[in-house]
Length: 315
Image (cartoon, rainbow, N blue to C red; front, side):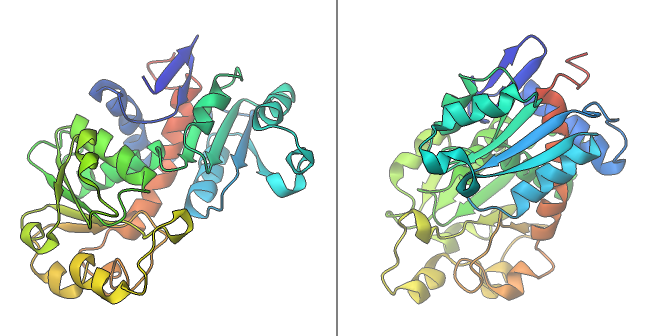
């Protein structure tokens, strides 16, 4: 189970294995916070949250900062290049040192899958996974679910039954996809992953999704298509075949024109415009890309409150 509990505090390490009731326990207050930023109160008043990021980030780091501040917390940004880790200190020793200073929660992004879980086992404060390697990115999965539910009028109970979602591109390296697949399917959606064998191997189906190779065969049937960034920094290589990749797997204007009425286009960002998604689609009428960004703040507010036992179930 990826949501662990000690007393009334909990870690949020992933959505795989999380039940529908727990997903709703985070999504419900997130929806309240979206409608009224003050709805969750200030349960972290004068508390301290540290963003412990070992990878670059714009959306996740910034929205966690805004979320924690909205709940009343002081937020501190850890910069590993300026820390004792540059002198050889371990990740666990660094985290335990920061914990000893009286912080209330750690938000951690790390390049190695499993690193956040390992850290959580050695500290006594709640840990939120802000992305670990190619493993999971749970708050991104939650905001993607909320975006999907909002677009298709499924906010009452977050029942996604009957919706079909295509996740397209570099599945092999995508922690976003793993969290989205877990959360969406638990709430009833059907997910189909589309991409070349090198980026979307057949084994991806073990996550609970279908696997297809032909995007054109499914684009007209789905209620949402989410493009994934080609992650060159994690080893994805197109070998000069970028144009061929776009031709087969890109969310182009022509493909968007064949989507069902009301079907949406998503992207977790950052985008390789012109590669996995055309600018005309990213900025077009079907796009909810910026809505995903906006919903990241209330989702992360709710996640922090839930981890610290400040949600209704923790009182």
